[in-house]
Image (cartoon, rainbow, N blue to C red; front, top):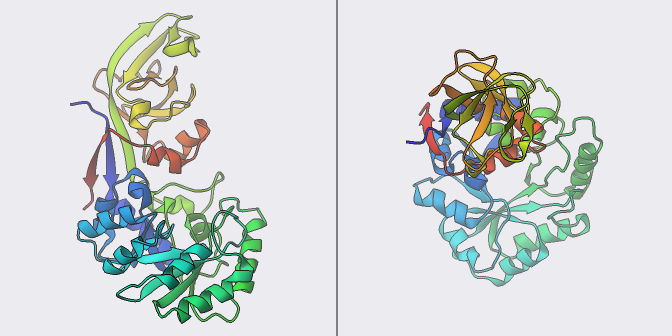
Length: 357
């Protein structure tokens, strides 16, 4: 069997969820959209179900997968519904639903549902993606209650730049949110992963840890609370070939690496078809046989090359960590000019093995 694997440490997942609770004293929805950022939504939900206050996903398809697996905890649809016809399923399966647009509000008013809904009413506090304009917020709250179809409302917004710890934008968004919710008697939710870790002043009865659940930092700089996270995924494979090259020889497509000295080259069963970033450049860190080394040459669809010149113990069959507990996903992402969210979500084809259940 091809040795490419993603090892998922569910005990680390639980540690990170508990950290979100510890830092905030709030209830926490574990964000497991996009197949739990590539970690496997059902397995992650089952690992957290005994202690999680609920889960959050992007859409009803993801929520129904959880319900089909027997997950009975609250599940919030972060994008709400896309068609009014989904409201019957939302009610039937006891899903919670974000309302971020006036058309969704109107759909609730005009659609019969057989039980009252829990709605998270989203304010556009400055990100300008989705969310109600502050001038419409009070009226939307009033209309939802007046519809007779809503039993509970949670007030929410989403930060655009909470991962920038020195930016004023987050404080400005908090101020917009506080002004918009004046006089509304409801719980609120502002803090996503960077909000949980870096913005204790943001009000939140509910927090929404996503990336931090999986043990990756949302920040580009060192941050004390983020350093307490435990990586959940270890992307691993093995060396499948070793060759000795003299100085001046190219490696891989496009000759993007030319050996500057006699070089020992290892080939690893891992490529961009598995989700490893094709744009990762020469020098991206890799762990081979327990020792850090670097990527050399362009990443291929199914293989990549590493420098084994200073890793004499490495040979065919030696274990390789592409990211995990020794080489952080955030390091690899930074070298590749992307973010850990993306490299996790891009994971495919590799088998997932779970530990810590």
